[in-house]
Image (cartoon, rainbow, N blue to C red):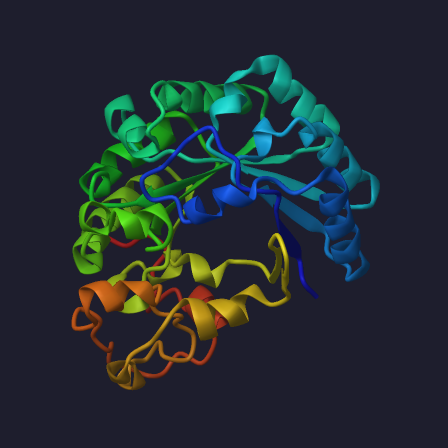
Length: 320
């Protein structure tokens, strides 16, 4: 059974991130309240129990509280808000979001300081607002799940970002390798790092979170680049998800990721992770090549559960 629906509520945003994958869609604006309610109702008929509202920026919608209340009223147990985090700095508004039924908050932090984060978001003051929002949410005992998009400008900052997030006592954080679409494609020369080099800094950031007993992971990084950290690959944990875009449904997000979004290579046929690995986003090798992705020798891993259960081969606390 599908566990979660990702409802794209539209494309307006109060940031203009240099790596935004939805940038080309901003011209389409936001979906209407009724359109989103209809999407929620349709997904609920399939037994979905969780929803994540995404954008654009959901929290700047005037009907945000209405949509959260509606989701709760028709039986959604988990209501996550994916956000740039700026509106979470408003205490009155945050309390209204919680009262309406939001119970998971996923703000984004892309730098350990305002200089890096605000440069990437092209929104002066965004870092201060997001950090203030995280502190507020945690003071209200809310579940805070951070996403950090990894690009050239913040790659080396990942250990410091991890230290910041640990100090803020977030519940979980994720480093997501940039998807080369939208603004990320337009700015690709200055945005896209080398994946194999990036993995070194990701691991340094992960170990800080691991040692602090935080739930941590990395997204869109093949297993061959995460040696010793295989248990922290996000794709092991993504629940069965359907996605509602503006004009169409994605009923099986994992299938679309594997068949259309990401790619494997000829050398992957010799890798022990070939049955479970999704590979990088397919735009990456078109830009950067495929030679850095090398097959990992060993007995073939037949399913994701083998990694989660096999502590001896995939230790819980790796070292760098």
